[in-house]
Image: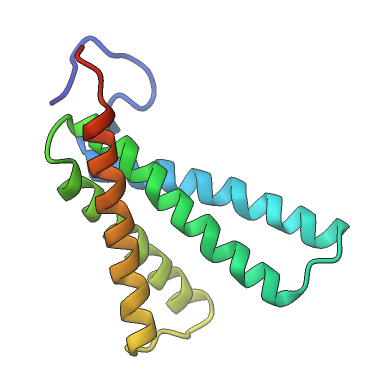
Length: 134
């Protein structure tokens, strides 16, 4: 599961595939949010478009984060991918709770958590299906 020959700053976190995938998902989300922010400031992006872009960014971030997690784990891609999506969704809920105090348990919120876990599982399955024979 863990390659002892690898070195670098992320080699320690690679031991924990879900954290590794969530790290990459958060980094991709941060980059995407900065891009949307710049487009909104320089262009004419409506609030509805910002909301749609945010959902798209989160879905893409979870997908690629689950790819990274599953490749790091090298097995059970759907499990590590869905756990990455679930952790990412819980982190977004925690941020929303602490920053905006807007957490409510409603069908819409639960659907978004389920959707992130499902996207993560799909990304994990794709990672395992496309991995090369090392």
